[in-house]
Image (tube, rainbow, N blue to C red; front, top):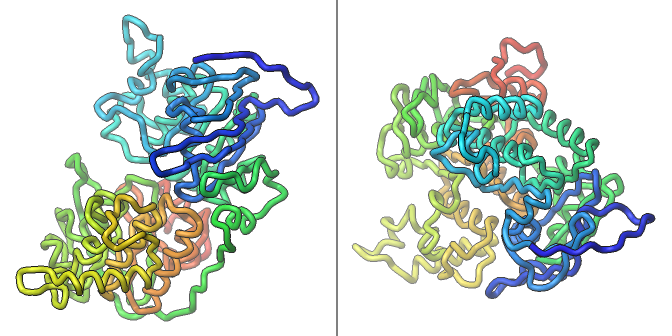
Length: 521
């Protein structure tokens, strides 16, 4: 790392980070196009942008993971050039990554201590376990210091990442979607603690796709679109969600969903007293019972790691249940081959788009015919009718507005939003009886989210029974007719009139009958 001190003007704001003219190219991509970004001491500065807008690239440069092609960076009045993340950490910059940087076989404390100079020779874990526990209690980030990372839920692993930077005493925090897996009460607590950190002189770069969240926590906002800055350091109090969304995607975005009043039909998907184990052989579902009606969106809320993933897998046939059963139109589909559910009309949008929802190296055409390749006219004896497959894919490309050079393009080259459209087109084109949608908008920008929401409501109008599993409460409230809450593999209750406070209490283990609140269903 190289450093040099620069003169300061006492009349200017105290910038702890000043990035000027940052350019970063990758083969065939201009990720950052002369980007300027300034972070003041004692502020929370939000960084917004679509997928691929260049946010992560810019912050990876600041965190020492990449080197810019051109441009200069000043940190705490010094001209810096980072050669590694350690250089950035030495300057007090800590990044909490969206994709966790943890060693699964080590404990929480061992991960937090990894790479530090202390302890040098002898590791007394009990001593450091206490320090980590105290830090977690101080900031409301509760996690067992002695637990192995592989034993933790996604939400708990996120907390470890935040604790790791707090333990290092970072002055400048880059926080990439830090609230994505937190319950409402935990988000409120985190925001309180972030404000406390700001009052102590720390500075935070807050990356989030949740506009309401950005409006709530940030002091200033910078917006990127296609690698360029469309708004630099605007005061949060002087803008609106609608203005920010337009700056992000280049067009007006509709936030109010056209959700028509619709009377639900008969129960299509019935989940009866389902028990199931997780990948560690521990109970994940403990007597889950739910009924989803035709033309209804039943939302399932809960902090990550409380059985949502296992429930979706039991319904779709990817995991066996230890007890209980799942019925579709009166026919059992649990503990049956996946194809049995597909043939009966189950559509499944998994949380993992890349490894479960698609085959990355195959083309758009190959991915959209995966559920119907055995059926005519796609099937031609033992072979695929290439002309029919291509025609089918072209029709879906147009209908679902999939932006792709050709239908023979491998889906690994698509953006997150377009990959999700490929998956949606495949699952919805078969006119399913039941749709299991797990985190359908996670990681998508506001424009892509708008499109996914419209498609889900279209399925509701068509009479599909939809189980929407999401950690986005705003999304659940906007789309769902009823909301069920799951905690430690059990349903805490179901409400019809969404009440965030009630849902938040249920997400942390309080049953609905123990809460005195309106909207009981």
